[in-house]
Length: 88
Image 1: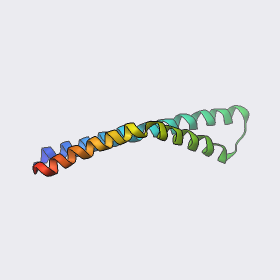
Image 2 (image 1 turned 45 degrees about the vertical axis):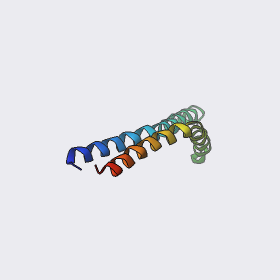
Image 3 (image 1 turned 45 degrees about the horizontal axis):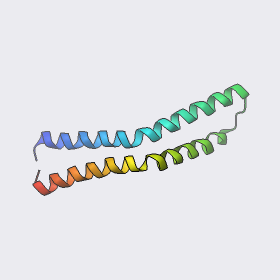
């Protein structure tokens, strides 16, 4: 395997990681900002108030997007397995 092929595999892995993780991170970010705005407007400064809605939103997003994430990771693994079988 040449250096360029290794870089291509690494780049493909990084993009797969971004595609799989970014929806969950964005949902957590949006829910966190919305709850922070609500806390700022109502002056309720309870630290644990953020965790339950954020956990629920991320869990629901994970259940909804699990087939998409599985397909992405399976495709990446298929490409890696093909590279291993072909010898690079």
